Structures are given as structure tokens and as C-alpha cells.
Amino acid sequence: MKAGFLIAALAAATPIASSAQDATQPEIRAEQVAPGVHVLYGSGGNIGVSAGPDGVFLIDDQYAVMTPKISEALAKLAPEPPRFVLNTHWHGDHTGGNENLAAKGSLIVAHDNVRRRMSADQFSRFFDRTTPASPGKALPVVTFNDGVSFFLNGDEIRGAHVAHAHTDGDVFIQFRSANVLHTGDLVFAGRYPFIDLDSGGSVDGVIAAVDRMLALADDSTRIIPGHGDVTDKAGLAAYREMLATASGRVRELVKAGKSIEEVLAAQPNADYDERLSWDFITSERFARILYRDATESHPVR
Image (tube, rainbow, N blue to C red; front, side, top):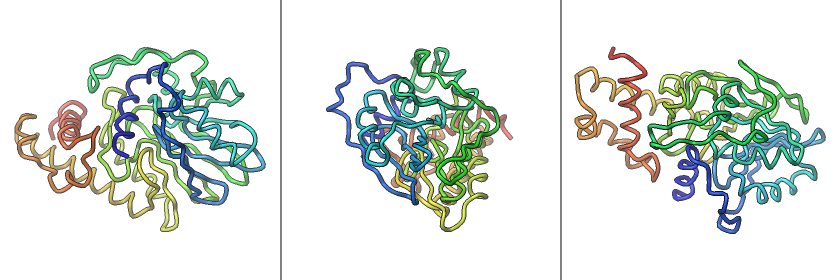
């Protein structure tokens, strides 16, 4: 639902009001993607779940106000709270439930840069606002640099860091036996992505991350995006083609000396706009992200 995704994206840069009522939050919908592996849809980033004899492993946890409904959904899969929560990046629609789940005994794990960014105020030019540092009990207590593996429920669940992609602390997760990938916000299925340049993200980094995931996928791989519906290798390849094509068009205009106003007027990605523009990342906002990426992250080629 577009309004739900808008709330999720806005809260990625600003914390959801603590006075928000649970009754206003959407219901959690569970979908099995492989034996013992589910995705939970709600308000915020898609949650990945491994549930089995070794307990519950969670990928991301949406917002604090969603914890009761997430816990209710998880109780239908396993009786105990999650043993581990792996954050794919620092944004609040993926880490907002950390403090609540840590209080229930969950061990919070993330890349080094996730803890670093959550530990300090973060200013976003995109939102023109500052996100305050997270409470100490919401911070990851185990961090890693390149990668991490969990051997649970008959699977190796492998998290791999990708540099300067959606942010500077992104991790995608591979369920090696189940043949499932969770992309975090490296992938927005069926819509334009938010690439957080203020948090060290870049278009080239996202494309490189997608290339790594494509190399791990086959035609049977189920792919859980950060936002949107579960997809497959063909969907991931189409997403990669869109990113490369759309960014390439804007970079050509930048090379030609065009201003941001001229780029917007040219509508270089009109063929994608009708299908992929949405409430939060409209065609104009996506073009602005691509223009800023081309002019600030990459010297004019």
C-alpha cells in the first residue's frame, strides 16, 4: 500500500512518534518463502524469519510500535522470542524494534557502521532534519566488518556487507540451504529506491551489491526485498537494468552540462516513471537523487 510505504520511508530518517497508537498500525502478514523461512509484511522494512529447532532468527524489526504485532505473528511460527536480530542497515523502519526485542532477550547484530550511525545524531539533507541518536539499549551488541554467519535450523544464514550502497552499513543475507536472499533496502521491488547519499550510499554501490546477489541466485531463488513483494532472479536482474539505465541517462545529461532543472524538464526516465514512481520516491525525487549522485559522488566523466 503506497501510504504505508510513505510512512516507512519517512520514518527511515525520523523516529516514529512515541505516542503513536498500536491500533493505527497495519496488521502483520506472513508469507512462507521456503520451509522454515518466512517474510513478515507490516509497516516498515520487510522482516525475514527463520524458525526451527534452534529458535528464531529475525532480519530487521520495523518500528517500536509494531513489536506487539510482530511478536504475535512470530508466536504462530515458534513459541519463544527471537534469539538473534540482524539489522540490514541503520534506518528506523528496520531497527525501531531493537530496544523492545533486546528487552525480551534478543541479541542484536549489525555491521560496524550501523552501530556507529545509531550511536550519534544523523543529519539528512534529503529530509532536511536530524535523527537523534538511538537509546543505548537499541544499539547492536555484536558488530562485524565484512560478513557474519549463523548456523541455525539446518541452514547457514550468511550476512555479507556491501560498501556504499543504500547506506555505508548495508548487509544482504543468504539462506544457503533454503535458497533465499534478503536484500534489505538494496532492493525496492516494483518502485524507485531511496538511496541514502547522506549515509554513505551511492548508485554504483547498489548496482555492485545487486551484481553480488545475482551471482548467488539461480532461477529457484526467492528474494525478499527491503520493500515490496517477494521477487526472483529475473526481477532482480530487471531492477539492476533499471538502475544502470536510469543513472546512465542522468550522467549523460550531467556530462552535457545540464542543470538539475534541465534534467527534470528532460524527464530522462519517463518510460520508467509511470510504473515505478510512488508517493515517497517520485520521479522527480529519484531524478534528484541520481543527479546529486552523479555530481557529488562521482566526478563528471
